[in-house]
Length: 481
Image 1 (spheres, one colour):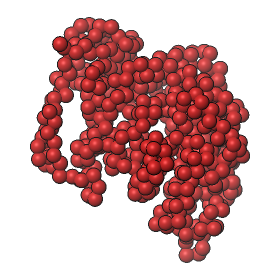
Image 2: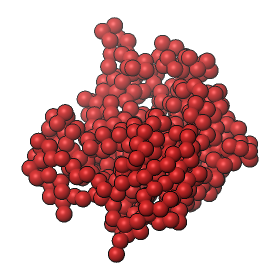
Image 3: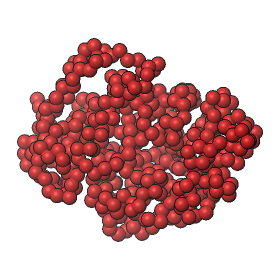
Image 4: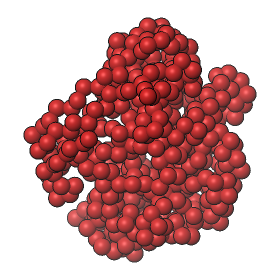
């Protein structure tokens, strides 16, 4: 039985203390379409040769067959076409496309950019996704705006100005929006309503979300809940433990490094700062990483290592997110968010794209058919296990109160023999706890010799495994009578 009391309130407390102790509170509840979902980030400029919403909509049945349940579009609203390069981000200039249209430098939040089609095309995209039983997430770019956006001329108070009358530039050389202005907040609230009610969006990823005042996101989510009956979601680009109470349904969960100790250690450190049940959207590549990082991670890490990361994404706590082309092992160095760089779809018919596609489809089916991977978020649903090869191998158990599944992964290119421990040490009480958490997270039962999925791995009996290079083992834990 858990006996927890805490002296920390969810709000109205210094961030330093809250960031370390909010774990003892509960995260907000979110709709199952999100918590059980599989996200695919669509970069229209790469997803199809046409680069349009109509062409992307035609590909939705392909995503459905792959196992994707949430189509997430990078911004498709009208972009600022200003050719003044002093208002271009350094990345935009470096790209060499000489294209003023940056997807994250928006001129009009209420209308689709002609590069992608029409307002009706976005409505049709959302409707097509809904007919397939999929949801749609759009991008909210509310930290900054394009310098020639008409709304800034109508409402100069929406941004900040220099004494000489020129607009102040933010970190990416775009005007920053002034959230002290109530009219701006209402304008953006109206935009969210429009995207949900008129276009058909089901949720949003919030660009630079931690740079926008959290109370705005609180108000936005409250409004969305009232409008949709609690079915809309907000995903934050960033990390703030306070996000998970009311403002957001998940934070970003980027995968950074192929190191067993850091994979588990980083997760445990972050989890300890968050309210119980906090969620993360787990991915290794997105529009930023695919644009900036060379070589692309597919080449830098290698196909087998990426297979391991994707396996982790689909079995760990949270929601997996694939970026355009991840499922066919795309590693095109020409890819850029700043211009049209259509990916080569023939990769689907040859290796390693063919095998990667099959892996993603299989993992999506496992996630869908074994609800233990999606039933419970937080420490009640995920328990990390110690291994005898902690520098090479991670192991964790997913639980939902009825079933348990073990996932063992080798994060090196060498074979490893190791054992795992089902005994989990109890947490030590801290200065903010009146009573220590006495929950026993130790695993009861035995590893099933029949794998749900394995890749170059063998169960040796007991708690012993032989795991090949980048190998993994997934099986049920048979509960003791």
